[in-house]
Structure formats: C-alpha cells, structure tokens
Image (cartoon, rainbow, N blue to C red; front, side, top):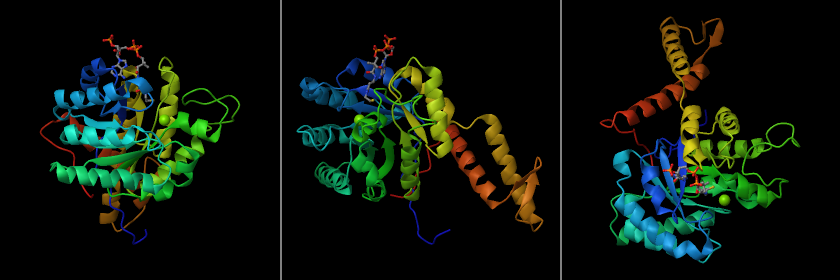
Amino acid sequence: MSGARIEPARQRLQRSELAVPASRPELFGKALHSDADYVFIDLEDSVAPADKEAARAAAIKGLRDHDWRSRGKTVSLRINGLDTQFMYRDLVDIVEQAGDRLDTILVPKVGTPSDVYLVDVLLTQIEEARRLPHRIGIETLIETALGMSNVEAIAQSSRRLEALHFGVADYAASVRARTTSIGGTTPDYPGDQWHSALTRLVVASRAHGLRPIDGPFGDFSDREGFLAAARRGAALGIEGKWAIHPSQVALANEVFTPDAAEVDRARRILRAIDEAATAGRGAAQLDGKMIDAASMRLAQNIVSMADAIAARRTPALTLVTSGR
Ligand code: COA
Ligand code: MG
C-alpha cells in the first residue's frame, strides 16, 4: 500500500439514482416516495430548450416544497452544461434560492478540471453570501471523449467531488460509436463495448475516494437487459446506477445491495481471519478456499455496504460521514 493518503468523499448510499425532469414537477412527489437512494432533478437533456426557465423555477419549488431529507433521499440537481447559456443561472438562481435543500450538483459533459473549478468557485461564493449551513457536493458526468481522456485529472479537481458518473449515450455520440441505443450491448461487439470506459472511470474514482456510478439504460421495458448491465458494472466496482424510470429503481437496489448469503460469507471470512491471526497465521482456509488479508479487505467492503444499508433502514442511525 502506498503511503499516499486518500481521503474518501462524504459517504452516501447511491445504489439507485432516479432521474426526474424538472419540467415535469408532477413527478417530484412520486420520486420522493420511491425507494431510490438518490433523486436528481434534471435541467439538462430531458428538458426542452424552450422550457429551461420554467423548469428552473419548478426545480426551486420542488426542492423547497418537498422534504427530501426526511424521506432519506440525497437530492442532486443536474445543471446545464458549461457550453450553454443556461448554466450560470441554473447554479446561481437555484443555489441562492434553494441551496439549503440541495445535497449535490451534477455537472454534465465535464471535459477538463477547470470545468469543475468554475462550479466550485461559484458554489463557494454563493454558500458564503447566503450563509448556507452545509457544503454542496459536486458530481461530474464523464460522457465525452475529452472528459474520459482527462478523467484522472478531473477526479482530483475539487474537494467537493463525491462521484463520477458514466454517461453512456453522450459518450457514444462523442466517440462516434455505432449505436442509437442508450446503454446495453450490441451483437457487433464480442462482449460489453463499455467495459474499458467503465473500468477507466472506476479506477479514477476509486483512486481518489469517489463513487463510480453508471448512468442510464434507456430501454425501461427490458428488465433483464438492465439487470445484466448493472451486474457487469457491479463486477467492475461500480457502486450504483441511474433509473430513468421508476421501474428501474428496485432493479438497481437489488444489484447494488449485497445479498444475505454474500454478507454471511463476508462475516465468516472476517471471523476466520481473526481466528487465524490469533493462532499466529495470516492465511487460512474457509470452505476449502484460501483466504488472507486481501480476502478480509474484500469482505469488509461488503460488510460496510450492508451496514450502511441497514443504518438507512433505521432512521435513528445516520450514515458515517468522513473526510471532505
Ligand atoms: N420519476 C418519478 N415518477 C415517474 C418517472 C420519474 N422519472 N417517470 C415516470 N414516472 C411515473 C409516471 O408518472 C407514472 O405514474 P402513475 O402510474 O402514477 O401514472 C408511472 O411512473 C409510470 O410511468 P410511465 O407511464 O410508464 O412513463 P411516462 O410515459 O410517464 O414517462 C419517461 C416515461 C421515460 C418519459 C419518464 O420516465 C422520464 O421522463 N424519465 C426520466 C428521463 C430523464 O430524466 N432523462 C435524463 C436522464 S437520462
Ligand atoms: Mg448526457
């Protein structure tokens, strides 16, 4: 292990993240009562250009009128991109008028660390001017060739950063991949064509204490397709996935929640390693398989996720927060 110290981002459950267009405020209440860990109110691509201003006003009202926190939701706002005329007002108007109700800003199409810097500086000024009681986090969408080529630098660009998201559709457009689907595989490619991009995003995220999150799967009638994509991501280290329709929330929660047998085995590994250490051994066997300190670290990941989920079910307990 390197002596370099990685501060983990503020910890939050982010197994499922329901996207809600700000131009459809009638969906806010449904999102509030869903089982999604996260809800993001979208001002970007699900809102038509002519509706941007009305959507901004609706987002402010939606943040103020609903008690997202008491329902255990993390609430995020996807602003418009830095290459649009809408972005500065999205940030200024919404953070000034409803910043106290907002947990994170999701910045789309981040290409360089300076994109994050701009958002960070504006947030710092607004928080100070409005004496906001908490620091708003930043999450970035990596969904362009430029963003992916700079992903390691972007992952280190701000202490507000909490998560990097893979935006498959814009990424496909940016690299000119031959598809018109939002996520999923193609018979033209032997395997998962998003594998290397996802892996790159996972490594950059984990190297800097951030959560790697997978974006949308557009065909919401294809339950098996969603599950398969989510499981491939989980196998690589992805921590959660978007739901672009309420039917996908339960699927994401299912995939990104360790099941009872997995948690049981993880706890048995931890006990067996403890017993081995007491007996003066580092490696041991469990059910005919070798386990050692690396097994212990793998098992701890599972147990700490299970504990965080259990704490969320018990409102009296709050998630452990750390770092930044
Ligand atoms: N959040 C909360 N509730 C939602 C919802 C969402 N994102 N999408 C749909 N619902 C509700 C509907 O209002 C409906 O409720 P009802 O049973 O009380 O009438 C129910 O879920 C079923 O919805 P359905 O009729 O199947 O879908 P729709 O035609 O209303 O909307 C989409 C389909 C895809 C347009 C819609 O789900 C949507 O806008 N998703 C998010 C898109 C987005 O944010 N994209 C940007 C990120 S990629
Ligand atoms: Mg996008």
